[in-house]
Image (cartoon, rainbow, N blue to C red; front, side, top):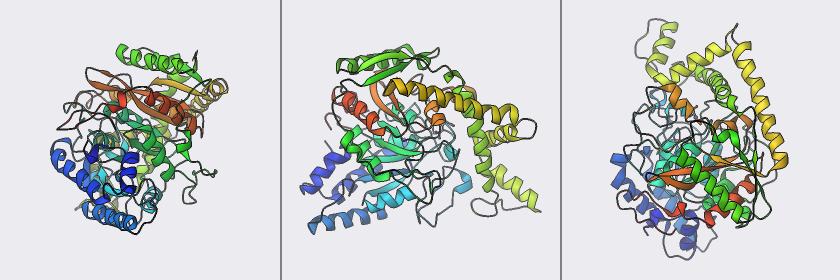
Length: 493
Ligand code: GLN
């Protein structure tokens, strides 16, 4: 297999055995980018010079006989809403097209401290608002499994880049499913950690009480390695949680004997594609045969999750978008006769339709006379949904569910129909509403397109979640299959 097709843990072994250099790996990734990027468009920008410089530093360390951390020399792609000092961070928006942050997000600092090699910034839905990467102000990204289909969103660029072997690992952000849904659509592993486990400092805010940075990788081991790097308390983020450092690789145990799995019936409601349902239920059987105990459970308020999410997320989005006024930073209209006109024209010209729609709906939900009926009500329902999960997790260790009602849809299919687009998030938003950790791993195929299995656990139980995911991966082959896109060799990682 080519170097860019391998996992981070395999490449780490090769690096410390001096079978390859960090430069070789970086080169393999950039060759692949040259080969496919014109068509796939997973990146907004690549950072070749920075990458080679970082790779060189790792090679020197190895030559000096120094120990290197697990992700040293490993190429990583960053979603373009994560601030990178001196490197454009656009959120795939015209508003930030020329924005160069003067500082690194905390997660980027951590990536650099661990000597990973930053390959570039990935395409996304504008300000992370969307489910297909089609609301990007620049261009849509394609799904390497079928280039007529979407890669999912909003972290579609990161997921497509990992699936097409244009990077080894990637970071995304997940407000309502934006890591898990594209991971499912692209047949890779995507983890949204518990709210507060990963710092949001330097990550451009969409809906602050949901946003969480997480990992997109080729397998569960790489997921644990990358989570080890990005997790941890940060005094720059008031919502970051102080907890003892966990080594998530300790959770990589191929055993689920005695673990209790809940299958929440509301996740299998109307609208779920029968083949997706079948794949997920077969996955439950796999874990059962490994000794897990399974039972059907119920989350009575789950049917309110999507409307609750939409109201709160849009309300928070409208507040977060207020800072783009043409004064402080970002796009400014070239012509305006007074201040109000400057605001209006800047925001009309700088934001795309989806962002504008959410600012309007969010402002409406927060306005006097509507606040109680919408925003306040949604907050109350949020509590009820949280309580449903708390009750369930007294009885079971994890929940198994589909990630999406169906596999990746076609480019253009839903982009003019926001309601149908929002419905694709119905199974991912509950974890964000309750702040729970959740992962998507490959569990089957429909018409050649990957299907994702979602595993949810209680707050801070990433280890349990990884253990179940790892056991499933060890005993199945879904993660080994590659899209077979433009010369991918596939096979064993
Ligand atoms: N698709 C969802 C939305 O548009 C989730 C987006 C996200 O997680 N960033 O709100």
